[in-house]
Figure 1 (cartoon, rainbow, N blue to C red):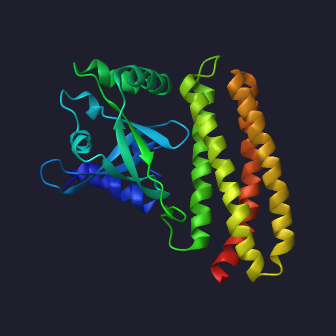
Figure 2 (tube, rainbow, N blue to C red; figure 1 turned 60 degrees about the vertical axis):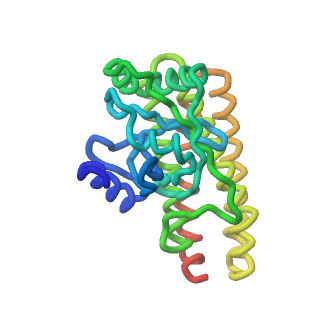
Length: 277
């Protein structure tokens, strides 16, 4: 069973689609469910994560700098298939412990973004492991933690809003150069937006067009906005890849402003249609 403290975090996380307040406000956390190495019992723990682009995220077995590895880490060594809850999506994943060289590179990136990881390492003699969680492919769309298709749109949109807010904050508090982890965060966001809009264009929009004749002008406007967002995403990608800090900051601001207007219009138009359908 989780401690009372962890259970409060888990309950708040699930109730608010990954949004937390207090000391964890703005933190990147996920819920990781592992299978007990000895008991076979399922255990859920809130864990800090690091975006890593592509098909994986990284979790760090810090245990607050404890001399012992956390239970969830020992569990996944025996049972590497785990369940991940992001607050928006729930999916099965395969856990792979990074070897020392790759671990050191990943941990350095994490420390660059959040010096608290270094403080945990300084408290213990053990080398804090870094674990990659690879999403396991499944048939059909992923499971979204929402009660209806309309709510699912809002939940996914809020995920992008939160990530942009975090990236803007990291850029404002960072130095004169883009850190390696911040570059990964930006590129992960770019890929996520591309995937989301591709899914809407290929699946959601045809579904709504078949059920509502009045959706056609809305679809046309949203298609134009998707093209515009794709242009802004590409500009951000170029600035980040080139390490152009000032340009990247400006592109994040531009993307935030135009994306927020797009998300608001999309919610206004799509949620009633989805709820009716």
